[in-house]
Length: 149
Image (cartoon, rainbow, N blue to C red; front, side, top):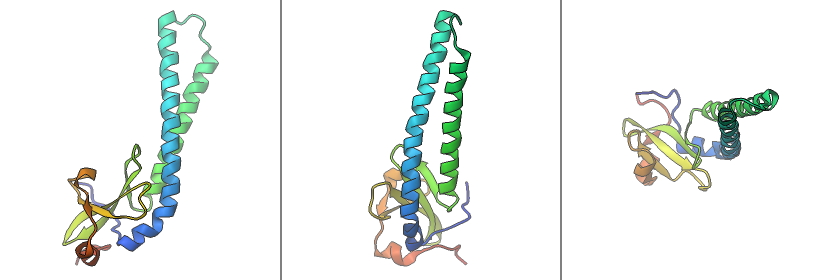
């Protein structure tokens, strides 16, 4: 079980949302560009195998590989930048981020999806997105950003 080094209060996590939303949008767009570059590289490699290597332009193939690798490196950098705040990127397809917190003596996650106006849900560590529960008054009063004593 991975233990996070930072636990958030709801207000702390929500203050990060504008910055995280911008980085997450960029990461989602980069992921799409990476997937396109990966598909183009696969198609080129399949074509080379089909023609037995005849009329291969190695510079073009290397350029495609370089583009894909540069996009992958930038994507990893963006995700690391987001996670450097102490939150976790859970799903780039839907733009999902979890914020560790303590609730009633156990570690749980506040859950935010790109496009939601605020952090409105939380879930147990082993439940994930499908187990999201609304943040209610009990949660607001009982959750803690620091380790319980």
